[in-house]
Length: 436
Image (cartoon, rainbow, N blue to C red; front, side, top):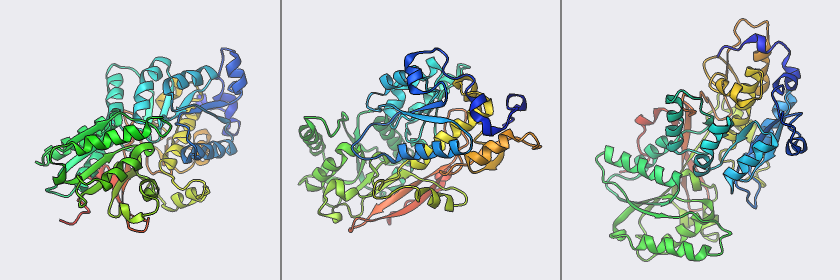
């Protein structure tokens, strides 16, 4: 990426003075109260839970690192349970970017609003290929798209899940009926058919949450639908595209079922790839999930010690799971660097720099290092390539990353799990870790 020095004629230590020149300018009370006239406000859009979110904590760490290096980032929390309404509210408050949403369905819900209002969003965890398709349509129409993500898409996860399932098994997919679940199921079955294997049988359900007064009844309805599948006793492998709220209950019901074979193998997508799976399934019996497998995006930074250093910044008792944390950190840094490169926090200005600061230039490993390179007027080459804690990012023309990795975890009988890593985009060469 070529940075225009004329737009960056002052040192990066006074980042805020030029970065905020296109800040909140309509004078609303909401904007004044939020403090966005004096800071580069970035909204977070994740569903609020009873436990601390490592994704939000990672965004806060990125903010702290950026501000320590001369930036002036302020995070404002939105509510991922009402993504569109919350995005509208965040925009009114003066935010110039969104970290999130946390899910593919929520990302699809706000996609058109982002385009219509020129607001950048970078999700650390939305993986549906629908978002690739929507960005491609925008680009083909000659317009700028405003949605990006720092994780590989489900086209890669589908390859891994299809590969992991033992050859010859009859397969059942149980998925939530939202954009993520429907699209991932379609991709997995497409993979099976491309390998001359029969498509999986499918059971779907409308997503629900733990605070739903009908939670137990809805869980039982899902189990009833599963048991009603013809030939369920012959199913050898079950792929589960579930959510944290209901996933454990559904799995426990399947394990206890007298209809589902006790020899069936279970594979869990990244939406429920939690570390201590047994605690959500059967807290008194870690062996209940012995042999289960799960997939989740991972990180492969160079050097690898960067990941260890990053994880040490978390209290692991408070944050037992760091799923998508590195991706959230990188999302904040990428936005800040794009704005610095453009010399403006106006999304319509810095959106064109998102790809540039993450690929094609001189490699840099932190906001401070990259920002110094951007503002160094003595450098012969001012192109940068931010390589994140998650690894290379390199946003392509569809807002997707060009590299990355997925981990396949195998749970054991004592509550632990073992990891195998597949790198993106070399997934065409992967072979199953299953024994024939």
